[in-house]
Image (cartoon, rainbow, N blue to C red):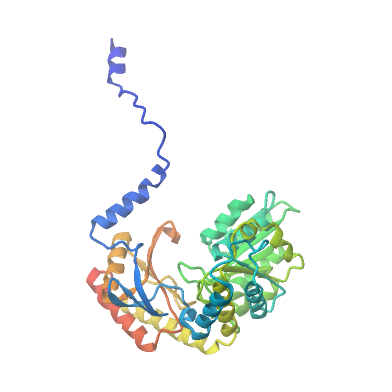
Length: 416
């Protein structure tokens, strides 16, 4: 009798059909709905109606200062860069309609790769259609099954995805921890292929890697080294070659990955190397072989921009002035920052939580300032932060205006 009652009390089995493949995103959907229900404008769907310069755009009908575009050297509106793109459109058309190994290599692609070789003083350069594909392609091709990739836990998503695609053993270590990296390397079986992947500047916090010490450890342990200089190319180092140049280890690095969507001011990615066998990558790297090549206008703008960056010392100096002033000013106002001192053109302002971070983002936008709202899982340690990326074209007056906007918005939202 009791058994019958127990069975009757059980809920009926309901067949809801196949599992919804979108159910894995339910937590993110709820987070977004909760955020929008609070009345905050969607911070991930901003539309720029018109871009006026590297530092200004019309957003929601308002003239807005741009402080979240990664346009570090302000090359997007350089007259020579724009003219090069227009000329390429006229002479070569809108696109290549093919991959680099078929019909997709035009004169402009070779000129762009030559500009990279000249910029870095290296023997080889490969241009990819995006920076994401550069990491995806190089890492997955050189580190495969049976090899080991030792990487910083805060590495960019493209680095993690390159590791997964290559099916190598992934060995992460604590962020910027030299001892932890060495311990991981020493546990790898003797004779196995080893690749250490580092970043010059980490894009969320804007902090710099101790490349000098890390590269030395990697080489001592017999590993090859790849450094992603996406957020340092153009303005860090004497010639703008990145953190590896600044710390004196560029000749010890096997591969440098970079992107055109930051300091270069357009779109695309690349890898430069002095490895004598590097050219075989053009035949074995799947994200290079099976992707349509960049349009002629894009590689023309990239090549022109890269060559101009070779003579960008004045711009680099001004960008550093902007970084020091913004970092120091925000610290004086009482904001919590991602680094104790300015280390790059990125200044991360840490928020108490996502709700107040979104409120601060919207308050700044209402003031006429655009920054990036970054949230977990993209951020380290489950932090919510406002990520500011300075430009060499920001004037001193604009930086002072930005500090005033942060002060007013911070007080209005209760952050300071």
